[in-house]
Length: 182
Image (tube, rainbow, N blue to C red; front, side, top):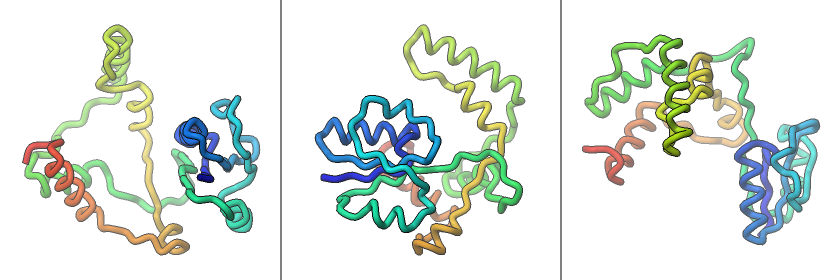
């Protein structure tokens, strides 16, 4: 099979490229100009340099591909204009309504979370078990992050499920598959 991977130089993308090559597939990987490609060193794949927003490039390069793994992403922590998304409090409130499990009522101070993450990572080095919290995770949680699906809706016709329904579906799936108690 012939695979096309967007975001090939990223963490997930480079692993997808590596995995499909190991399974004997032909791989084309989209890499932005100037991207850090250290994760792709030594891999024999067809590199396509360009931007995912270049529609002509995408149409041309996808010809002959059986699969496309779209894992390109922009992890910007700040934008001048953004539409506000749900806050964590709104998410917890919706989950409380769906599950009947009370939402957290207290916020842990940042310095305490950061300290706990450091301790947790230190213990993880000795035990070999995953830490309960990570320094990177705590640092990322300090920033507002959002997702704007408007372009996917507009250009691809991507359907959008209201958050309450998406949470209800997810909770039902986790319960049905034994991940949480009913």
